[in-house]
Image (cartoon, rainbow, N blue to C red; front, side, top):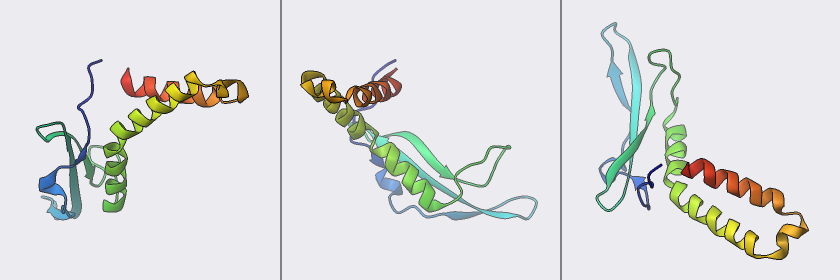
Length: 118
């Protein structure tokens, strides 16, 4: 696996104030759509987009702008969370605290780091 785009990540500057908008379909229905592109790296490239939309093609999608923003914030926090997990794992590995019952915490951090990097 290659390295992830360096943080920090953020909602792309062009979309910070993005709001849901109405989409009219050919069959006369109207539904709300909302996109939050997340960008990062030195060139502010778009990494992914969190979308709010009704179920399309049989796949359920995020149903509210608040849920989309919450999901985007969690994704944005990923680089900092990974760095914090690595730091906590190093601390646990270098201390005697593992003998005090924190081995399960160490294992959980290790699994989370592996899940994010492999």
